[in-house]
Length: 406
Image 1: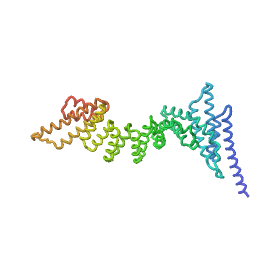
Image 2: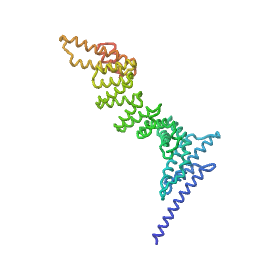
Image 3: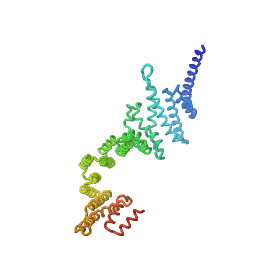
């Protein structure tokens, strides 16, 4: 008999707990809906219900949580209209929290009842409320992004983007016609890049890939994330897609060629370079890449041809000048291995003249690279050191040597 009584007491206690929590939810809503609402008290009550086992899985609990945030925002905006002090950041945070609570409410409301039916009485009103707050999600994201608080900025921007894929808005024409979506997705990806949150980059960057202004950068973020995460196959595919979509943006072509070159897939690389040149034969970057490929294949004559074509198209292409100088120095080094070092050999003077000619040809190209990019010493300082040394140019050599020592 004692066991039976004890069981009844437990059931009564559970019922009382459930009743108390459901009452707390109702009370929280009542407080928030008052003329002078005590939001701190309403949030205290609803936060307890959000974690309590008796109410945390009820759609109504999350609906009320969202409603409280909606009311907080409305009250702050009332103060703004009345020219009273108001908390802008609270408006932004309430918009964010409301969206999250309403998303969860919708998820729970979509669970079929014991008869297998779905009765979601919240979706229409909550969807309308979320649409009304999208501007504050953008504003909140911008504020935190400008403060370099990228975690918070990502939270706002990503929530905005997530609206488009949420079932609540599957057939919503306003969301489908949203022209801001790609740019907000770009900023979500950018904030994620700063955080090195590469899964988020891969989620949001593709949403922005077709945007005329930021699409190429979004695709660049996506490719970088794939490479960092070690997905080489998808990374290469993303580079190919980037080249096709944004051929003028050198990131994709350059990285793809580097991949082929480093993997010794020169035939694939050359075929791709030829394809790009066929589309745009006077593109300096494409010409430079073909020279670079020949350079890596140690086909120096063809490399020189394409580097010089690059310079013809773009006389300010410092890297092309630098590499022409480098190839002449490499030719000198290669020739020196077979040149005679015997001063009594009849060929000695001839070989020395040939060696000197290579460095003389390298000299103006390295000097031009220095003129174009004086701060980028890696393009010219070692080259000029070798050139001036081998040409026995005392004053010039001393000046370069000081630069290297500094």
